[in-house]
Length: 312
Image 1 (cartoon, rainbow, N blue to C red):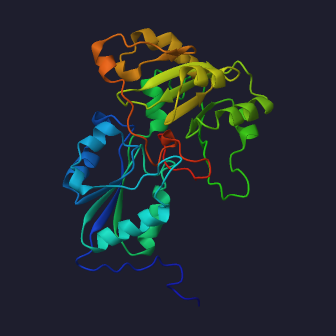
Image 2 (spheres, one colour):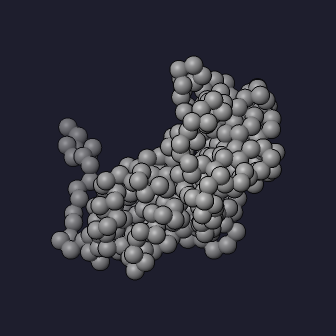
Image 3 (spheres, rainbow, N blue to C red):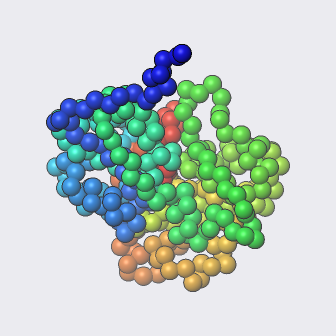
């Protein structure tokens, strides 16, 4: 007979004074879209480790004395993931209640899985608190459903910014072009020309609608639309910058049919020609851009850096 315990999960041992880590999704950035659980944990935490992806409004509500920024700044200094992993363990072993706050959902292109494994290896108890993923919420507040009975019965979520240490890309653009559904690309503003060309080469029609949603639900959110053939020029003319979500597929054209009655007023839509002037005083006041951030490509992280967070 074999060893009865061979397939048993590892036994957890825990010191009485060890703290706990919460891997918390903050949603797309609007504080009203935080889950009740997330809001309670942020308020009660001893320490909150964050990047800028949760957005300026959510971060602004956290007392400065309990915030630690572990974000990555594009083109400049950035915090290695290994440091963040170590810091989570250190703080928990000091007995703290630690919130690791991430944009969107912690397990959607947010390195939450890596951090969970590291915590488990170190014997640190943790809890996962799901968040509203920007991959769905971002297009939604822009008037773009990722599925629609008339246009798309499937949706694929793809990172536009893979780990550069990989021998080859794990994204099969040929297969995605053949699916016939919606393609949502996160962290893909910088590499838009490359994957737009890949999709056209794979046979996706150049007239396929595309929408770019910049800083979804943030005060200075903007939206621009075009087609697979025109979207790079649309991006450049409108000045769309990270963090932004790219939606490729027939659903992207839905926005034009509903936008006149869409009351997500923060969207500040832009056309192919550039930014439209705000129509109200409130929109004018929201026109400031948040500080450059770490984990999102928003903050234009160098192309050599692996994927960091789902809002970008």
